[in-house]
Image (cartoon, rainbow over all chains, first blue to last red; front, side, top):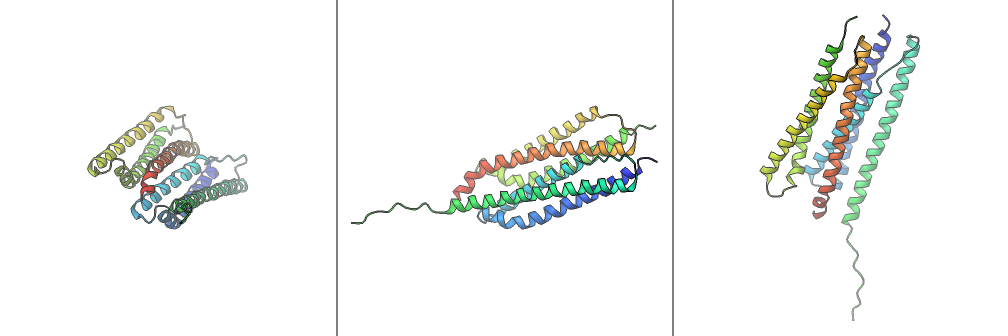
Length: 130
Length: 118
């Protein structure tokens, strides 16, 4: 059978991509709760709801991308090419995941900074006292 | 050679309905809070609005998925089956994620006031 090696490739790639996405988003969004609480001034309900919504978006975006780049082409249909193609796929996907992670982190830090700016009281102009 | 299109349609519909229902449920549960802030003092009304939004979301998405079924290429091997199903699901998921992020940003801007007043 001609296509078996490509199918093996898919059977390896899909679980690895899914597990990677799951692991990264679990780690990211378990730790982001603290930032969310900071951004929303300790209002737990709204912070956790926003966190969950961002987590869902992260899953959707990354699993969508992982499935989009699924297609593997092999010219010779041997194992060496399969391993090379797989490592290229998984490597590029994990680089992409890393980028997404840093973008999300940037958003958290930015939100935190904005929240901090708002709390700072406006300095009162100096008054002369007679 | 046997045509595998029907199998592909079955798999596609199964996965996509699962994903859409799962995402809809999460958004409904967590969105209640945000929708409730739109018309302050009418929690019950906002609850109903959110329900209607959820139904609309289901209808639009599942309807769109059913529409895209008419444009599949003929499938003659298992590897092409996997590729085509993955690509179609990926397209739908990407559309979903774009809509989802759009929603988050709209909510974030309209809820800014809410954060500030606190």
